[in-house]
Image (cartoon, rainbow, N blue to C red):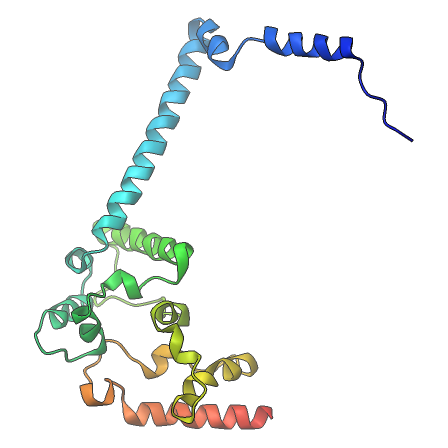
Amino acid sequence: MAQKQPSSGATRRARRARQSRPSLLARLRALTGRTRIVVYGGLIALVLIIVAGTGSAAYGMQLENHDVFCASCHTEPESTYYQQSLEKSAATLAAFHTQKQVTCIDCHSGGGPFGRIEGLSQGVVDLAAFYSGNYHRPAITQNKLGDDSCLKCHGDVVARQDFNNHFHFFLARWQNIDPNAAHCVDCHVAHPAGDPTQQYISVPQVQAVCQRCHTAVGAGN
């Protein structure tokens, strides 16, 4: 059954009613007395909150791009990590990344915009703790870096299927069948000193991870 269309007269009356309705600006101008003060005050406060919030976030994101800013309020062991990054010869994987123009926040945030926001929000909590004096000495790292923090730059390592890269290629398979499977940082530790010729990995530690993977994936077949 066809839907009945409104008559042309009804359409014209509806159009005239919309045109005769005062605009939002006109209604705001018509306010008087206490109502005008409350509404105008609320709008001004809303604008200031938006401007301040946007400006503070932008300023914070600019500051966090500089490692010296991160090190300015982080206590040990972060202060030592920062000093290591300044040495000409990179003794750690993190210091090696610094020489490649990688900053603290580049690793200490996940992939995509939401990962960056998560890193920034953690920084806000740490900053509040620092200024309140309610923080641990030495600092306790509670948020282990996720694989997305590494894969946003090193995503190609999981794509190669040759034997020399099988440990990276099969990592996702291990993680799918074992909730206790390893992650990138279980082999690629960032801050302990390591051998550059071994890509800063601890061979005994990596061998133990290899054994865990072979055991789990073999059992899953």
